[in-house]
Length: 113
Image (cartoon, rainbow, N blue to C red; front, side):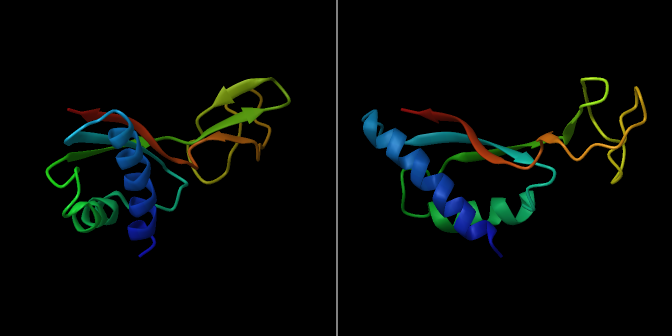
């Protein structure tokens, strides 16, 4: 379960920001989870419960937002969201391997006090 390691890293970033601002508590973390990131949001939520225990984020809410895959078609210069595992441009029907969005796991926002 690699989500524990990922959550430890995300929480470390959140705690660094919270400490730098003199916060006493983290209330909410928002993570953007790409559809191709290989991260299971349920496992990530469980990992958050485990790794946040005893920290400023112990009572925080974790919100995960799914980020869809977006590809770029070099033939017609369009960004598109593929409808399946074959990344075919809906405008010109060319195949694309240029994935521009949907692979990342990102700490998007943090609410502290």
